[in-house]
Amino acid sequence: MINADAISNFIGRQRTEHDIASARSVGGLAALLDHENPPWAPRELPPLGHWLCFPPSVAQSKLGGDGHPLRTPDGLLPSVDLPRRMWAGSRIRFAKPILLGTPIDRRTTVIAAKPKSGRTGSMLFVTLKHEIIRADGSVAIVEEQDIVYREASRPTAFAPPLEPAQLASAGPTRTVVPDPTMLFRYSALTFNAHRIHYDSEYARNVEGYEALVVHGPYVATLLMDHVLRQHTGITVTSFSFRAKAAVFAGQSLLLQLVKTADGAELTAVVPSGIAMTATAEFVCP
Image (cartoon, rainbow, N blue to C red):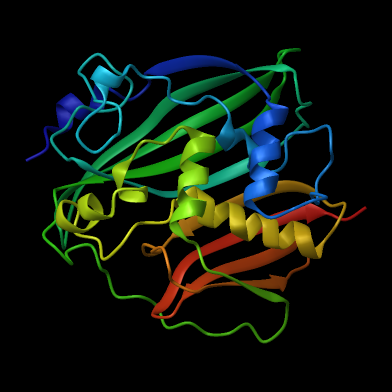
């Protein structure tokens, strides 16, 4: 049983981190996405490129058995006994460009923490607000990130029914098959040590997945990349995504795009149904 009063003590907690917008990391992302000439401004952090910044440089002794940093009562995130974590979605506003090689800060605030009960038992929904701040003090990016913590799963426990996939009536599609090498490279780019992305035995036998799990933000990045491939030179003003189900290494991942008045509606589809939905808003040149 989650103590709601104890959880409420975490709301409002803040942490500020410092970094440099790295051209090396952006070059690594371009390589992962198979670009020789990336479809974004060459001297700027690309849309969603801020996920490559602020790597969790936690001491090895302070990682949990799953590879995530341990949560403590004096830390930023609620220290509840719910070991499984999922990045469920984000809502992002891009206000100003960030030049590569310039210093940036990330101010993170816990803005919500709500305990719930579901099919897999107790859960905790945490919302973080990230503000990416340029050297001149202006806010370049604002993101609200939803994280779900849940109980340890039995095998196949985390396999919710998927929505039937309906192929978009118009708009380009692209198919990607994420493999272990791609997952390793994305983990390396983001310094993500969560074992479900590289330790198949752990993913199956401990967390109950059928195979290595593709990072949610990597799937979202593939959707954003699909937009940029189709609409060169655009300025992305906002992006949001919602993870519907896990994507596994070796699965065929169909990326769908339907143009709208303000941007595009996006869907990532696996053979069994919809795994992620997203919305991008952008301004054409």
